[in-house]
View (cartoon, rainbow, N blue to C red):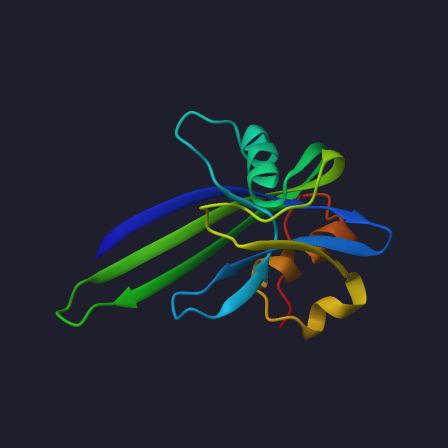
Length: 151
């Protein structure tokens, strides 16, 4: 089974009761909202990754204000011929604030739209689980930077 690790950094930007989100697409083409952020380049610090990714995906300049935590997810897929993949995503989540720039969509990237959404509207959005994870880290601020799983 092929193993793959992806390290990424994401921003939770909340102001005036709204959260900044970027819209990407699932493998099946479904539009879904996510936190601005993305994969680290080799040799890049995750702190620099999140600042770069926020600007690329939203047009905003961002300042990191806190490390919220680290999240890890693992997905295993079995292939048709007995192969498959074992994928792990290691996601560093930061709190950030907008310091400049103008909201605009990403051009030629993994997202096509960026927008502010009221926090109370987030549950009605088609979104990736990372949005809920990031907002929960932002609200709870666990000392160890890790969420306790429910159930």
